[in-house]
Length: 245
Image (cartoon, rainbow, N blue to C red; front, side, top):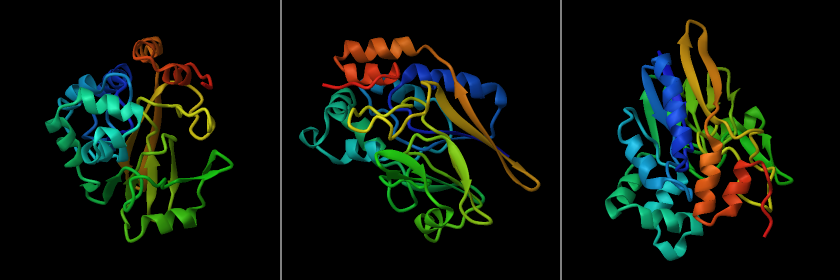
């Protein structure tokens, strides 16, 4: 079985289009989406419309939940923009997505951890940098989840790690937001390039093969869109710069 895993698209339509084009010839049996679909000052409505054409299970991310649960005055500027762009039905549909799902026998998909969509599963923050969490910590965060393969997102950090002797955890990275838009913590999430990232996992006789992929696309269109919406912080992030007010 071959599973394509995408996550953290954050309204980046060109990045999503590039990933979908790249994975099509790989002919996965399943495409799993780990959430945080549209939260960005980019193309939230258009991204959601494209995602409706992509078959496969979708997990709710923390930003998806906030858009469904919170009124605009309790949201930050990015999600206030997204709230305005989406219909009430769109926002409700985001809130109705499952927070955890067994997407195939022995394969569980979550956004953060099985219990918290705002907690990293494979990482921890140290001195404003994202560090790998020890395997024992990952096992604790998994709780009673004993799946053979756990798919997680949220951190935007693309890698895989063995949580236990029988559990492999894979984070596909972020399709649409490879860098953190926060001048206070510019190194917390830094993928090293603005590529659109995803993963393909394939079941083999002795376990799961993991391919971590980075796809190029027209980043200048994203920078232009962010500037059009008066968000120089987002434009700077995609240019590899730190935006300081």
